[in-house]
Amino acid sequence: MKKKHNTNPAIKLPDGLVMGSSLTRQAPEWLWDNYLPSSALCSLEGEKGKGKGTFIYHLMSCVTTGTPMPLETNRRDPAACLLYTAEDHLNIVVKPKLDAAAADDDLYAVRGVADLIRISGDTTPLLIDIDRMEQRTGKKVKLVAIDPLNAVLETSIYNPQVFRKTANALMDVAEQKRVTLLCTRHHTKSGTNLLTRGLGGVEVGNVQRAINALIDVPPPLATEADNDATRLFVPVVCNYVPRQPILKCQLISTAVRINGVQKTFAALMWHGVSAITLEDINRKSRPTPKSDQARQILNTMLEHGERDAADVIDTARAAGVSKETLENVAQKMGVVHEQKSRKLNGSKPSSYWTWRLPDEEEEAAS
Image (cartoon, rainbow, N blue to C red; front, side):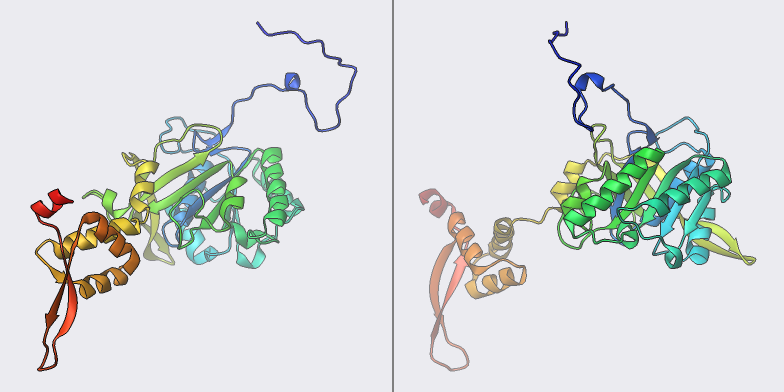
């Protein structure tokens, strides 16, 4: 039984401070069940050229036609979409790809690079676009895709204090209009953590309600059925639900006629839940520690007998392993060092060092 407290309701709290007893539990609404929440700022991340745009076009098709999302079975009422794109040409890329995805072109509108709005703490231009689209179509705008996020911001995503104000304003729009704001971000070339690899780093990731990545299948995890067109849709984190399964999809060529000529454009085909987990990806994509690399080099080079120590050191350096690390690991492995001499081309004998793996007696002695 809930314990009663002697509270004084006559005491008014400051504006914005809400008593827990005044709050009500509310289940989240979803654009895509358990993957993309409504009324939220979300991200789709990945390296350039891996299909983020194609994914967005597929999503727009599902929204404008009411087609079930992957893992869903029930159709939804068709809804409207907005797309802000700074990377794809509207007539040459966007329109053919949306046709390939079978989107309803009466229910989406697009701003290209020449007409992009600039978003700051004042989100009036975005609100006007949403309102006018709803008036034009008679449908609720459920998805606003921004590709990429940094192209429409008035401020830099690398300025945490200023960016946070803009992000808060965007979240207000998402909640006020009950729309999913899906922003793409390119992955940096460095780092392996999918949670922090998007441009802008931790601060940008912190304001997202859901972070998703579209990536290649890491080679150690690939199967015979995977190829260069296979992708993993990875739900990295979502604030509202436990981590969901990774999905596998493929970029497929779809025919579209342009001026009477048949052209092919990429579209998405889904292959269901993947057996790969985020832990698998993080483990396989994490750089091998230098000490482990050193051990591999020593075992490989010395397995058939002694080698010139200088050759082993040079090989390690070429692999990014320092001489100090190599020598430390060699000592732990009990590698035997022997000084020898040799005479080259009639010159005076010179000394050099060889390394070899210890034999059974030497291992036992150590």
